[in-house]
Amino acid sequence: MHLGEHVLVPDLAGWCRERLPKIPETAYFELALDWVCEVLSPSTARTARVLKLPIYVEFGVAHCWLVDPKIKLLEAIALQDGQWTLLGSYGGNDEIRVAPFDAITFPLSALWASECGGSCAIFQPKASASLFASTNGAFKHNVLRI
Image (cartoon, rainbow, N blue to C red; front, side, top):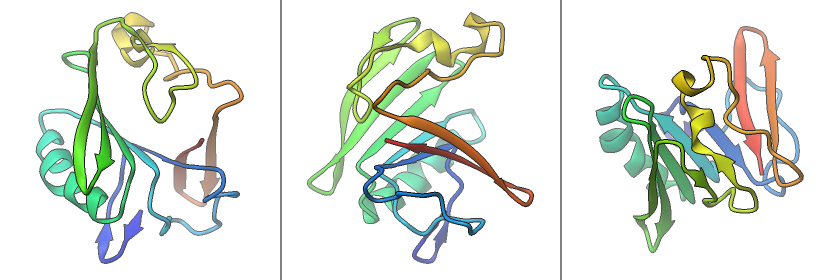
């Protein structure tokens, strides 16, 4: 992900279909995200919160999910008036409906490998979203178009 002079690698990235009608042929994206998900660990939490979040604000990323699988927590934040605003914190096995995927409800337990034997998808989107994974050489895109 190239945002100006910044090169970032989000864990998951999403764009509205209107803004990203097809996945680019390049090995990177330059169009600012509509949604990003950062999976936190002790070694990545500071980078995500201190370094990446301000860059996402600068480029107008509307939604961010911070997922901490160790403590089974999802924090959903949205960009409002140039600042992140907490939409909600969700934990354990809650059934959640949260922007930008508030058209569907999904079990938070689908995020935790310990709850599904280590082989589950985040969720199975219906008409509101499609998950694409395309390979371009050695680079794999994890793209969610909303």
